[in-house]
Length: 280
Image (cartoon, rainbow, N blue to C red; front, side, top):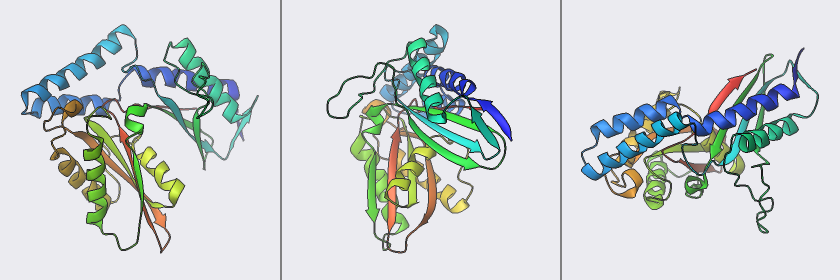
């Protein structure tokens, strides 16, 4: 049994909150650059250049890439041979988020009650997803999620009669309806299967996978490629002004489901779909 101090988890989450908000993942930055090189619409090409300039200046000035520093979504893969000492895991994560947002001078955007709308002042509580796995390590991913894109997400409980094409139409329709709101070019996370609550989690997890890592199942990898092509044919374009680059990537995650159902969720990620990870 390996022991990990709760304070180490807090320190790690703090650092990940700051890093995720200030440094764009390499795959997203590279795809923005590639999109700019391929773009045929002059206005869209200029916008993509501005987006890259913004990312570069954020890094140089050590400031957030976007003013919406998001709700902190924290994925924890905890080895069964790990014993956390000195406090609860959830408390440790929330202490880290609080420190990351206050010490990192990140915008605090969390309303403590969804209807009474009083800001908590430190961006807590986080949304925490815990998965128990083999081993003696603790892997943590922090994915700050802005709500311009989050608000454009959709979920539909299809019947088993729905076809692959029906699902793809739903994904493309979701991007088209979202228009400029999620700050395209977007990253599209798609969840298929499971049940009502799990399919949304699958879509969220999909946004944390590198766009350069296709689904390990070739059937779904092909679906990702087809969806990306179809989404980019919508012409929504960068920031909704038209163009070739509506999406930087489409990631699909799936899970077995009930014989009577076929849940599908689409979680939109903006052009700064952020996440940072560490292993303790």
